Length: 200
Image (cartoon, rainbow, N blue to C red; front, top):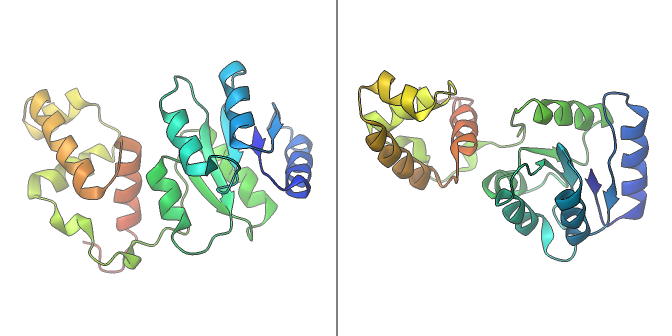
């Protein structure tokens, strides 16, 4: 499903997705509320939204969707300037695609998102004043690395030799230090931090 307040952008995107046989365009919307209303009634796997959707905006829309079961994964398609990619990731989006990107980049990103991947090519953690990775304890770093392998809490418990309750405690601390809300965001942060030239 696509959502953009600009009718020309919405029309162009619709045409692109309808021409690609890998996708089935469910609906389009010009506002965040219309997008939300549709995905509550119709199963949607991936949503492509503009960050500045009227009336509530992209961040609030993603926040509301996080509370819903079987909510679509969201790719934010917007101007790629400033801190927007990080804001989109922090809000809970699965991907960010700048409007300056080629059409095939948007399509391929949506395919990756549908497969459960997170795509934030413009997220540069060198912009961070202080890298939170360096604030982690040795145990928390080990947990983040294990988490990046997609391990469950029980598997983390076994791998790290601690109880599942301790795993939950460390995860909670980890999310707080990284300023992320869930496993997916923590994993995305881990991989983006490894792209740093001075990463260990």
